[in-house]
Image (cartoon, rainbow, N blue to C red; front, side, top):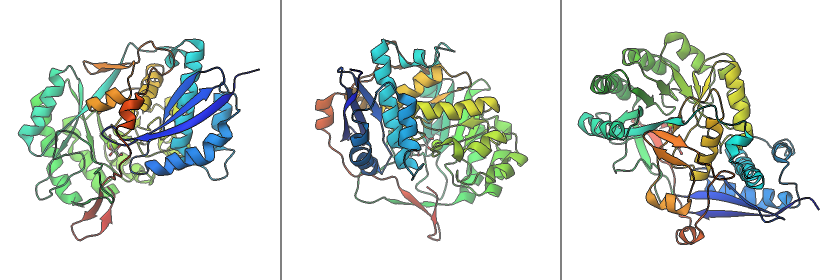
Amino acid sequence: MADRIESADVIVASPGRNYVTIRITTSDGLVGLGDATVNGRELAVASYLRDHVAPILIGRDPNAIEDTWQYLYRGVYWRRGPISMAAIGGVDMALWDILGKRTHQPVYQLLGGRVRQWLTTYRHAFGWDLPSLLDQVDRHLADGCTHVRVQSGVPGLDTVYGVSRTASYEPAGRAARPSEERWDAERYIATVPAVLAAVREHVGDEIGLLHDAHHRLNPNQAARLARAVEPVGLYWLEDVTPAEDQAALEFVRAHTTTPLAIGEVFNTVWDCQRLIENRLIDYIRCAVVHAGGISHARTIFTLAQVHGVQAAPHGPSDVSPITLAASIHLGIATHNAAIQEYMGYPDLVHEAFPHAWTFSSGHLEPGEAPGLGVDLDEDVLRAHPYTAAYLPVARRLDGTLTDW
Ligand code: KDG
Ligand code: MG
């Protein structure tokens, strides 16, 4: 009898931060792993998987990856959105993992094989003042990195997206409700161009510099910032306006030559079709997990390829090393994949998810293990149960809620 999916179980654990993992086991004993983490909404996606997806996976053909994707997407009247697409993303990754194990191939081979030797990454540097920011930039450069995202403090604001008070970037706070931050876009715009210019002066012309505005500007503010930083020659300016307003990018694009990147909150190709087809962005940044897994991220990146847009997947520490593996396998086999974000993980996360992928000298390598090459250490996961944690919310100085 042909192989069947025998079980699909969901593991929610918190080795330093919360992750949702789906583990699919087949009747011939193969095990595939997928990441379905949605930062701050972990239990919603876990329930979606446990209560609504796992029961209908049992008995299906594990090799029917595309049909299962369509079944979970088109077969459900209520489509799209981060929870359902991350759930589909987790299943999709696990099925590609199984296919790789069944055929004794790393997933990138099943996607057409390597188109490059390694994936270039960018790392994160932040500092409340210029000396501490330059210190972090220097550390990444000393490690061999060629691309760095730089985020800085803003005078008058004691919380700024991307600028942590601790050594780690982690923005989600472990508490029953989100913390609140204050935000002022004009102060931010008045500060950032000079900081980026000073970093450029410090690193010279060869290093790629990136900056993330995290959806916090209106179109006019975004256009002013993008113009003001043109002399810096950024590799990209990220998420300048709220991502759901695709028309906003038309205005920004018309006013600047600074390369634009957006997409970490997109879940399907329909969220970014207009941006890609009208060439309003230079880089599409969907995360493999939140955009429905390897199968659908590949659809998005293929549309991007047709329109001269490059792929640059989201890779924060709030997606697990399984998503990172999926992103590396896809990126190494995708012609228009330009760069992979690598925020890095604390040691405990590497212990919880032992992996074949490696990072060194600013490069990511998938490794040659069959499938995605990621495992679970169940003892570590059991020892670190789920703990409620939320991203902050942001208010303007007058108290109006704004985009975080
Ligand atoms: O969960 C939210 C984070 O993934 C996001 O804030 C990180 O903007 C981010 C980035 O570019 O990595
Ligand atoms: Mg971002």
